[in-house]
Image 1 (cartoon, rainbow, N blue to C red):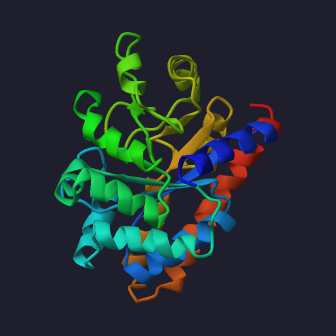
Image 2 (cartoon, rainbow, N blue to C red):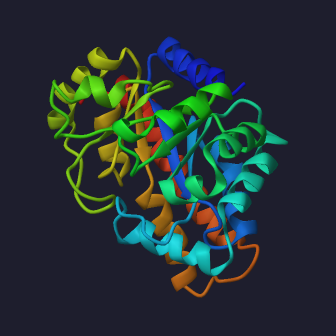
Length: 281
């Protein structure tokens, strides 16, 4: 299904009159079994779409929480191949929830774009965000993904002006990810009032739904952004729950306490996003 799953989910969200909740988790964090249990539990906790990060040694767009998540996953042996295997395992039980793979260029170059696109589609990946691949360098990757009906999802930022936006959104499908703050993940807080006009600009330039991420950690912040965006992305707040469980001495495999922590947090965020447009700001 690939791209069709993303389009169908955003069409359903529009029909319901609400924003979507997009949860981000790191593959293999804190270990492969626990991470898979979290992944499988996210749809029931309210995730409308799921971003799955594959660990990389130099995650330049990430703040400390996701950097540490990548390091935990790498120490436990998680790879891009293992990430695709986890997604394939998720797809055995869930054929509806869109999965977006998020990471960096080097592992894809090593895999080979065509082989990666083929294997990602076979595993059940619907879209890919490659943080450090600029539009000017993305044609080969976009060609490979297009051949397997996998969306290339681009990042627009507060510095993407009207001249730059058409370049950013070219060959983008599924949705556009708007980075709400300048800087890395999990450090600054998103301001819904400041984000709103940028969401409109990106929508107009792309003709696609706009998901807003970076700087959204609390249900209150998620609800505020849900009133102006098509979807709200939360990552660091969920990754923080993994870290809290590990720091509390819950470092066992599989880790039911960590799984419960993450899914409970996801549920609180999902409820806030779902209710946001029914409650006056």
